[in-house]
Amino acid sequence: MTRPRSVLTVAAPLAAALLLTGCGSSEEEQRQAAFCEDVPTLLEDVTADMQAVTSDPQTAPDVVGEAVDRLEAVEPPAGVADEWAALVDAWSGMRDLLGRVDLEDPSANTEFVEEATQLQEDLVSTGDAVDEWGQENC
Image (cartoon, rainbow, N blue to C red; front, side, top):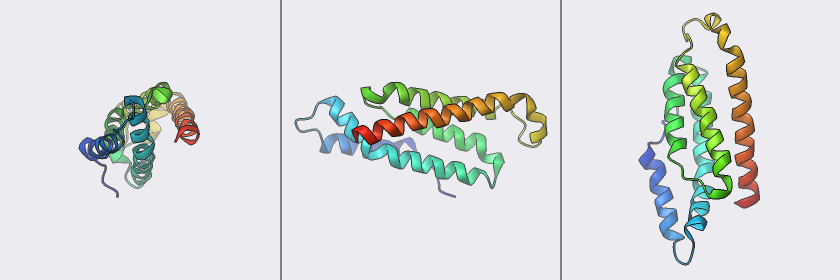
């Protein structure tokens, strides 16, 4: 299983990118460059971590919680800030839901099916919106 990166591990490349692109660039341009450089890898790591959860569902709350922490540490450029906030909100909702479900007995969670389905749809649509912005602007 891939070990999640700490906030510092994610923040260090962001800081380096800001320093390297700093000459003559606006803060917003620097933020966009850092976002375009680092977020695809971050999202790939989060996806890989989530795929690993399928073999050990008991780890889901911790894995999703760590993903939310990593996503919240990102400072997106203005052009994608709303989409990024919606993505983080969807992940936060999934983290909160996992804190309420019975991971030992999935059949006891029928009351959460509708909420889980909506969160999955939100994760897909917000992820698509961030991806679309990245394809157009990175």
